[in-house]
Length: 166
Image (cartoon, rainbow, N blue to C red; front, side):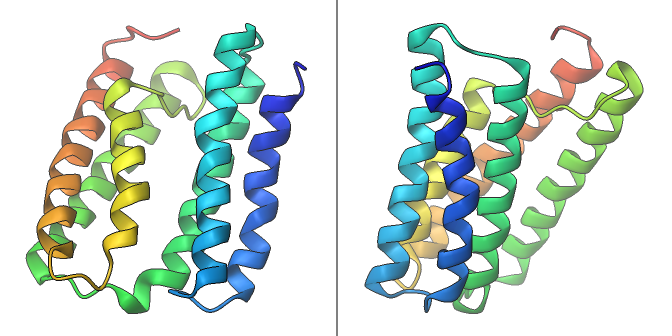
């Protein structure tokens, strides 16, 4: 039982290959997307529920999230019709996250991604928000998610730099 959360994280990485091979915005794409997303929800939930949380599991989850975001981003990027100001906001979020990574390395001698509530909310909203691509309400939804993501990134940086985490 204690291996199941890590197997779920690993399966999310493995699901990225078929995700890259199917056409974006098709039923097979969204089915794979949903399955991969469910593994993300379940891995942490089960690890906490069964008391099998580990640093390795948290890092594997972060790696799986990163690989999933890159694969989905690669597939959905051509479909993103966003205003320049929103692209600048996304760039700002990426800059803050990079600064957080550097700060984490300086403070803790390792790069760490915190699983704060704000980061979890951001991830969940990003996950469901991507399904709105192509809809008339996508840009306002994307702005809302970007604002929450910026808050989460700033909060994460504060926590890293104030050494409040383990």
